[in-house]
Structure formats: C-alpha cells, structure tokens
Amino acid sequence: MNNKLTSGNPVFPGWYADPEARIFEGRYWIYPTYSALYEEQLYLDAFHSDDLVNWTKAERVLDKKDFEWAHKAVWAPSPIESNGKYYIYFSANDIQSNDELGGIGVGVADRPEGPFRDAIGKPLIDRFHHGAQPIDPHVFRDEDGQVYLYYGGWGHCNVVRLGEDMISLLPFEDGTVYREVTPKDYVEGPCMIKRNGQYVFMWAEGGWGGPHYRVAYALAESPLGPFERIDTILQQDPEVATGAGHHGYLQIPDTDEYYIVYHRRPLTETAANHRVVCIDNLYFNEDNTIRPVKITFEGVAARKL
Image (cartoon, helix red, strand yellow):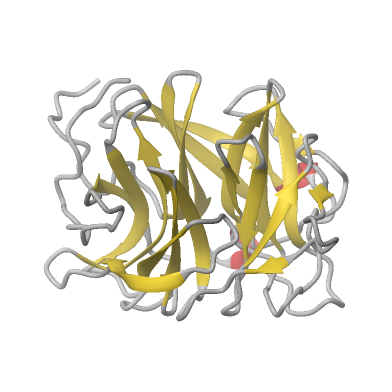
C-alpha cells in the first residue's frame, strides 16, 4: 500500500487497452485487453482495487488454452455476474469473413478472477450480421433483468438478447436475433449506461491505432435505439495523451457518481499497441447529457465502496 492521494494515470503499469470496469463482491475490477501483437494476445489479465487508487493484478484470468477455437487476437472482454457465476464475453481471432473460425466467445467462472473456461466449446457469435465484424462485446443488464450484448466492428453495431442461461441468444419479439443499432460515425467499442430512465449509448470513433480515436454518445428511450449522435465526450489532449477511447465505466451504487475507464496513448509513444488504462471523472448534466471528459495525469481521488 502506498500513500498516493489519487489513482494517477495510467492506473496500473503495462500496455493494456479496451477496459471494461465492474464492481464485483464489493470491489472495483478492470478487465482490459493485453495490448500486443495479435499473435501475442493469448490471454487476459484483470485488476482489482478497494479504493480506485491501489490496484492488484490477477494474472491470466482467461487463457487461450482453455478455448480450443481461439488462436490469436483475444481482446475487449466484458464480464457480468449472473446465476451465482461470472460470465465473460470477448473477441478472438479477428475474423475477416464468415469463412474463418472465431468471433465472440463466452467463458464462465466461479469467481471474478477466473479462471474462465469455455462455456459452450465454440464462439457464441461467429458470423457477420448486418456488416458487423463480431468483436468488442459489451454486456448490459437492464432494470427489468433482460441482458443485452452490444457488439460490432467495421462501422456496424448490433445488439442481441442473452437467454437466462447467459450462453444462448434469445430472439426479439419479431423473431429476429440480430438487431442493427449503428449510430452515425460508429466504428467499434459500444458501451451502455442507463440513467434516470434513459439509455446513454456510447461508442468509439476513428482508428484505434491513431491519435484521433475518441468516444461519442447518444440518448434513447429504448435499449434498441434509435441512437442519434449528440457529441464527442472523450478525445485526445495535446498536453496529456492521444488516442483516448474504447471505454467502460463505474458507478458508485446508489449514487450519481460515475467514472470513465478508458485507454489512451502516452505522448512519448507512437506504436499502435502502446496503450495504457486510465480513469477520470464522468459528469452528467441533469438532462442526461454528458460533459466532455477532462483527461488527466492525476486520475481520481480514493473512493472506497
């Protein structure tokens, strides 16, 4: 334990990206991509904290060896607790067509730190639907208990409903399984918050390897949209870092305190995979619109649950 007053950014050492953040068992968790060449992205680490300032690494919470179909490009995990177990959705293999094996997998574990094992022995989503590459899953539980999985690259975003078993897809009322919900300028990295009865949908724009990567958002009355782009909320700051994007968030339970957890590229770096995970404050206005995030070196103050 050190005497840091704030988290500092990055919040932990190492090249990591695409963070999803959660509160599990009274603790903060961040599940990022291990940012390396695709051939080296063969596992996932996670990090946990009691105060947002001091973070402990849980190594290899998921490993390719437990997923026979996965062989590279394991990235963008999104976990959820359900039925007394933990489920994690992630991308693998970076498939370029329906002729390749890969897509979005699902692992299951008894604890937040894993080990996550293959829940179904194959990808959960392994095809291109509505033009969306099956990557970047984000799992979201609505207030009525229905769980949705938003995902998609190549400029298209889909949403599916998960069955109560968390490992099957539940058709919508019209019989369709895959619903396209792509907002203007969407590239990848979807994320959903429900606040004051509205759906706050966010996504990444620009190229992940460049400085202009950023996050925009929309508001809707339904988890299925329509999502009309409102504004950019997270982007580079020439005095702090470039390529700020692909985020998750934390909400302190029963409060209106939110944090954005995201990756960015230090000003000293130009290599695409040299990305670090950071946390800053996320502020809403009363009407659910979001104030632009100020990215900082300080990070956030200690906050116990």
